[in-house]
Amino acid sequence: MRFRDRAEAGRELAEALAKYRGADAVVYALPRGGVVVGYEVAKTLSLPLDIVIARKIGHPHNPEYAVCAVTEDGALICDENERRQLPEAWLQDAAEHERAEALRRRNAYGAGRARTSARGKTAILVDDGIATGLTMRAALAGLRKEAPARIVVAAPCAPADVAASLRREADDVVILTGEDGYAGAVGAYYEDFPQTSDAEVIRLLLS
Image (cartoon, rainbow, N blue to C red; front, side, top):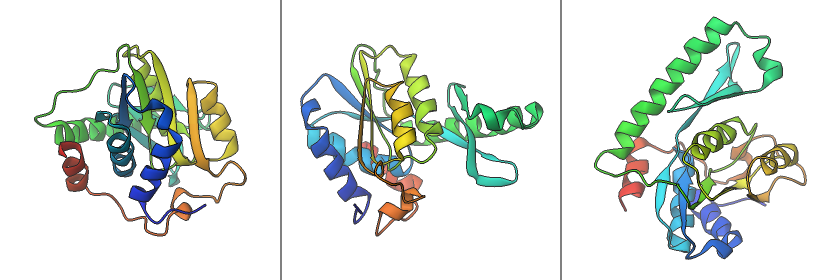
């Protein structure tokens, strides 16, 4: 299965999440690309949209390869096999750098908007795709501190092993494709997969 773009993926994901329409729930998207998907989910299901910001920490010799992820509140999730091979001082510096970027994004995206609390609600965590699962796991850990009644992880694509891992941590996991043989990258599931700008994120959050 391939999607024309993130908006189409969001509409198809919303269909798979139809049971949450009208529920006491909030859609929390992971910026930046996840906000485009999350916007369509929230609009279709008539739910409020907010964000949870988690930042990937790439390997020092291959920045595209995630070894850890950190949220704006400091929740750090790592591939423990990789972490044991990394200098702790380097990891802490990298985590602080990404945490600062997460806070920058919060300030940029959240200006003039009150944060929607997840307490007692169903929190639907949405991204435009899942690869290693580290950023989603970090977002999940950060959101859990708000004591939601239920956490749902939803994405258009994810590998089977990562989806299985997330099912051990979330109350529900909805994945549209990838579990029958992952294509190797999130972008492989899209015909059009441009980088989402800060301006686009802000526009969608204010819509």
